[in-house]
Length: 262
Image 1 (cartoon, helix red, strand yellow):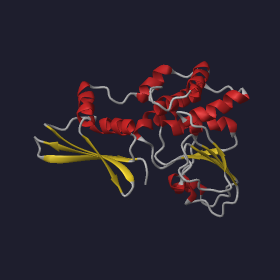
Image 2 (image 1 turned 180 degrees about the vertical axis):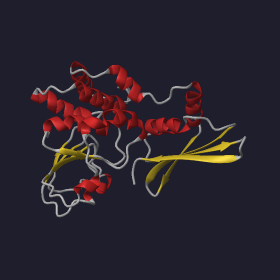
Image 3 (image 1 turned 90 degrees about the horizontal axis):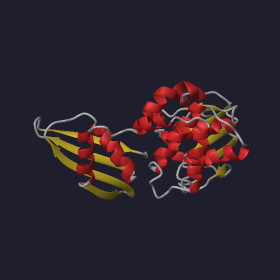
């Protein structure tokens, strides 16, 4: 068996990377992390049938010949898969746009460029090979690029991100669907809360980890609070965030936390 894996808590760029890398490795089976990042749930719910994912438990007892890893180069972000792989002696290829997080296999082949999105790295290879892709996969991939480049507004944006985005649109990517997948803050009260919290953040390093903390008082609990925290987490790019809301009417505290590492 040959497999494709991404990092735990799969985000839009991870899904975009898998959607494209399947064209390079058509005989490989994608395996899904047990966790899907909240920002990617809409996309996954709509397109899960296209991936035909295995679960990590499906790897138990299977002889794995080759592993393609996308959107990470850190061992601790893929350990849930290797927990079920026995006596692996095959080949590993890593496609990742991040700076080195500690390479985890000396024998692995690394394909890496500092593009804004990992999906871009794989998209450039498809352009080089002259490969056409299906509109559904183009939409998934374009969502990944938009997410990891902040709609092409982050400082990490490169010419290649625009080039691959154009290639995906030429292959039928749906802009309305991409917009829907990236829509997080839709109500005025969410936007207001977003700015209130953003102005009251505390930044700390805890045992070497960059953590964001926030405390805010609100009259009553409102819907969409988690989405607000997820958007702040995305913007601030910390390792974890903890927000405490004191709800005055109920005299209760609500804690919402997110993390992108173990």
